[in-house]
Structure formats: structure tokens, C-alpha cells
Image 1: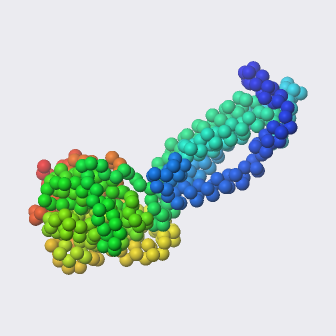
Image 2: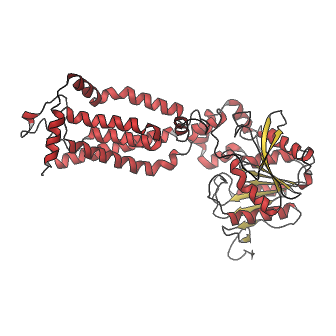
Image 3: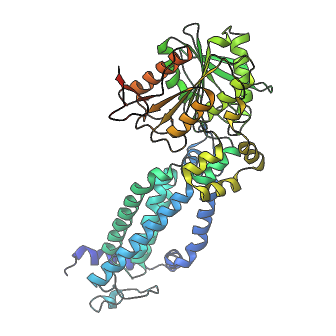
Length: 485
């Protein structure tokens, strides 16, 4: 195989630099054993800072970078990318068979051989490929580290040329292989890297979480309220009709993300109040309880909107998403006089039962180990349906998506049966996540309209709604489905 002339010329120019200090540094950099404590420290840093102690979104770029990645997935990407680049280099070396410059009879007499190597094949450089794959994955996951890690990869490649064991083309090809394997690996795992994982999820109950979205802007009005247990909070109010919808977000959401369902209620003709919850946004209490203690926050909001703002209980509807739905059920049952209606979207009957359904028994058992004891004990006994033990004036509506693995339609139907409520099924919809655009506005508009009609006294059967807002009775089948528009 013919190799370009510039490859040999550039090699001789770099290898010809004579410096005792540079030789010592390059030998240190090229020795893999010297990188073991550095990599071990890097791994420990990722495991400690990445998703272990979340940072607020107002933090600097370094804190924000480490707050949004699951370090365990990042480390998995590094392992896979490095193993892939190493194997590609191994097979190419065997097939191409280019001799190292220090062992090449045609040039070895001009080479200053300053290092120790295993094997006599040169093309491509596995050192360069592996360092580039590690650097690229790090840069994809944590952009502020990109200049530093790519500089280290460049030094590794330079050391291979300077020490006389690789040509420049070997190093350039190695870098290309490393970048390629890193890019392919990251494209496969990048979505997983954005998820918190079990440990990151458990740390929601230990540390304040980053703010997921900005706070509502005008025409939403900030309103100072106080939880039942005395904590000052700030809700947001949108003026509309005489009926009020109190909107409560879930564990993965924030008060700003609930502007979307709030606007849908505003379109129906409601005034809307976005309720703050502890462990989210700027609530004085930094951590969540997963639902049991959030009931104090919602109860404080309900007292404020009745006593201060003048909204009657029988004209107030609570919409709760996921955990917010469970909180709404608990509070409505404890009020005594109840509210007009509760709309629970993606609600769980029991936190750990829903977790088993979502991630399996083994991972749920691991999750329990990482949760603080007080939170774990509170969630064990937090069963919202158990609070509704006597007939109330409140009407209950349960919204479930057919693709919801936390609160499937079966959960909504069972809750509706136990509370005399209405089940509304969203076809091809998953668990409610309002902070992204994965929901259908026509579908949600139709569902909320049907929920409000039921709460206001119209009796109906359980309904299924498709993505375009078309309604049919549930369960839907080719013989029994009754379509209506």
C-alpha cells in the first residue's frame, strides 16, 4: 500500500524534536497506567455531581451541564464507544499490516524511538482512537468540558508521533474512528442520558430540583398564598369566568409547565389558578414528599381562593396531573364540603404499585432502598382513593392514556367504579407531560370539555377520545362503538 509522502515528512519533523523535558511529559501522557487515577476521579466526579445533587437552572453553565445528564448512561456510552473504537483499530491493524516507524526498515534508522510498544503494527493508532472516543462522549454530554478533553486527546495523539511509534496518518485516522464510534453511541443513548434513572429519581426526594420551565408571564398574575402548615407560596391566576379551575402539576412538572392546561380551561370559560407545590419552583420547602405533604399546599390554595378571592367551593374544579391528581383526590375528600369536581389525569392508586407496573418489581425494590425512610413510609400509605370513604358532592373524572404505563386505562376505570366517577381514555397518549409538545390540543380540549360537562351534572358513559378529538363510547369495538361528534 502506498502511503502519502507528507505522512513520513511530518512524522520525521515531529519526531526530530529533541527535548528531555518533552520526552518525559510525552512518556507520561502515553502511558495508559498513568490515566487510571485520572479516569477514576472523573468517574467519581460524574457519579457525585451528575444528577446526584441537582442544581438550579440559575446556576452557572458548569452546574447546568452536570444537572441535565444521567452520569451512569454517560459512563456506559464511554465504555461502548471506547470498546468499539479499540476493536475497529485492532482489526484494521491486522488487515492493513503497516509497520510502526520505529520498526520499519526503510525509516527506522532516522527514528528517535523513545517509547515502549506492544506489537509492530501501526495503522491506525488505538491510543488516539480511544482518547478521541472518550473526549467526544464527554463533549456531547458536558459541553463545557469539550476544550479540555479534546486538548488531552490531541496530546495523546502527539505523544504517539513524538515517541516514534505512529505516523501522523495513523493518529488522524484513530481520531476519526474515535469520533465516529462516539457519535454513533451518543445518538443511540442520548435520550436515555437525559433521564434521571433510579438514583436520580430518588434524589428528587433529597435535593431541590432544577426549575424545568420559566414562571408564567402576563396575563398570568402572581398571587401570594400560604400552605395550611404555614409556608408562603406564590401561585398564578388567570382571570376568566365565575367558575374556577385549580391546576396542580405532577412530580416531573413545574408551575410554568401547567400554563398549557390552564389555557385550555380558560378557553372553556374558567378562571384559572396554578397551584405551587413543595419541592418545586421557589417553594420554601426544597424537597417533595411525592404527594402526601403536597396536600397542605393545595389545601392552602383552596382556602385562599374561597376566603380571599371569593370563588365558591361548588364552582371550583381541581385538575391534577399525575401526582397532582392524587393530591387533588386527597384534599377534596378532606375538605368536608368538597368541591364541584376533581379531574385526575394519569393518577396512581398507590405510588409503589404504579412503580412496579412501570419499571418492574426489582427496580422498584432498588428505588425503595435509595428513598429517604420518611418519604418511603409516607408513600407506602398514600392511597388517594382510600380518602374517599363517604358520598360527597364532588364528582370525579379520571383521564388515562392508552400508552400510559403508570396509569393505564384500567386504573382510571377502576377508580371511576369505586368513586362513581367518569373515565375518559386518550387514545395513543402516554403519561401526561406538559413541558413538551407530545400532547394533542384537540384531544385535550375535547376531554376537558367532556369532564366539565360531567362535573356540571351531565351523566354519560365512559368515553374514548382519539388524537383529533373524535369521541366514542368505551370500550371501543367495531360492533359496539357508538361514534358522535
